[in-house]
Length: 272
Ligand code: ZN
Picture 1 (cartoon, rainbow, N blue to C red):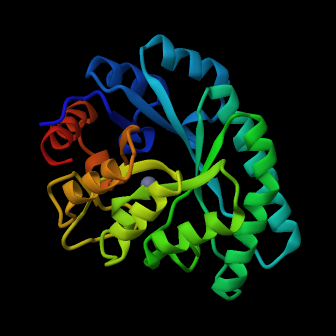
Picture 2 (picture 1 turned 60 degrees about the vertical axis):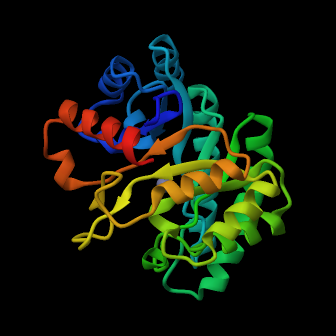
């Protein structure tokens, strides 16, 4: 059984709640960390939200999400970089030490071109992020998202991208949902940790059968991912940060969120 000292929950996990409600409920339930999605900040002053979080005794773990760099058109790529620079400002004001990057892909061009544009985009944002004290984490996404969401689809690809960039402020977010199927995942987690680039660890489970490729994630222990094996791999690779529960589920969002939060906590205690 895990205690809750490393438990972080993403605001998107309890999407029906406002960020204020999430902060209150997480704190009351003994959750220690919160990752804030940018949509939860809409119409709010990020600094005020950050104060509210620390006043509640929670720690901001990261801001989700930046990225979406690739596009065939140069104007669109410029807009993406500008948006990521805004995300850096938001993270700085919020007090988030990390931005998770869903790197993006444009199906109108080869994946190689998208990967090159991802590297260019991260480079364009990297200096400002480092000055703001905000790290950037490339999150490899399951290959089912290689059309529009990310051209970085394996831990190896994320590690290679970081190695190519050579920026100590840029690392990797490991999410079991995206990499559980990959026979090289454990070895690449070890490589990532050894390079000092393992910045974040996200958990949920893979529903069998999956009914929706975006919004049908499962509670830990209810699907087919060997989560404990990945937990042990990140820990033995030197990771000691928060373990972040990130579940997008129209099914769970339609239920009473306080009860669902207790299910999340119970699943974390037993299965992570
Ligand atoms: Zn994730």
